[in-house]
View 1 (cartoon, rainbow, N blue to C red):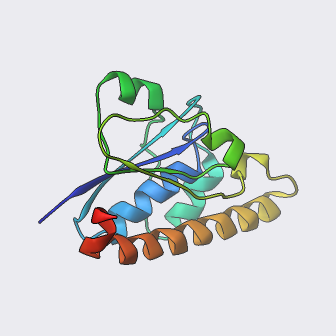
View 2 (tube, rainbow, N blue to C red):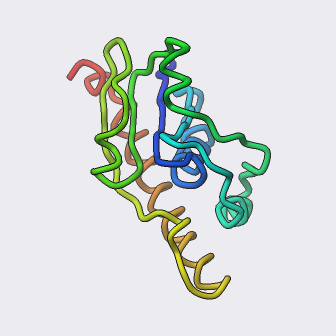
Length: 149
């Protein structure tokens, strides 16, 4: 079975990239090896931990990682997917080898304001958008032609 290495990148590796990594690992049927990292690693967002647990996915023990450390280690990826806004995505390093670079834009759960329930509801919306995008990616990337474009 061919396994494609996919890296999800956002600013702090505390929310969006963590969710995307978890969903690709869950739904990817072993076709993908998913990792995530951030430009400025922070602390895992507790609201993201909560909404992922609601989906039966425990990311509470995940550590945030630096995309630059992965680059220094010489890691290579089939696809690097940014999950932050376009301006932040431009700061992502280029990884060696033949990797596709894809940009997905999602709201940052760490920026949500309001009551705890409002913040959780907005975080759920982002979670669901990310899962939908990951499922679409899996469908597209499961086609051999995707990798030859």
